[in-house]
Length: 199
Image (tube, rainbow, N blue to C red):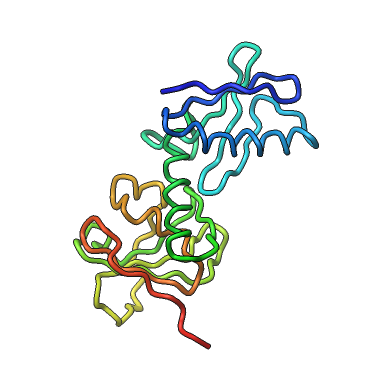
């Protein structure tokens, strides 16, 4: 782990990242500089950054950029590193570029709707609609090749996107596809991306 430091608006800001993330962490500092122009940086401040939520925490006179504790309870706890968040953001950005789409963020605390048992099945399909309500990512997941939806709500489960780290990490980069898109996963790879039908 490497600690990167910048002075912003008279405060020392620190971020612990992987050595290969020194370039992408600059975008985090840039956003913090923009925020500091209108609102002083302080301990407890929370900053939405793409898929994740950073929290500034005091470390002596410095402020450390922390990410949700994805190995514990990311909804209530943080950890003094942003390496995992930056890794997901970088993979999502690369995936969006490869597909030629403008990414539409999904946040770690939003949910996907999955047919029971589908998320751990070898071959799955996922489609994104306009999200509603705000905690909904718009993504629905089912077994590959299925077309008939069930009217029984017990046939479905809601899964916070952060749980995909352990359940289906290969899906995380593709979550930034805009509504109207879909994808197929075969094992540990995204095998096909479906574009919205031409209107």
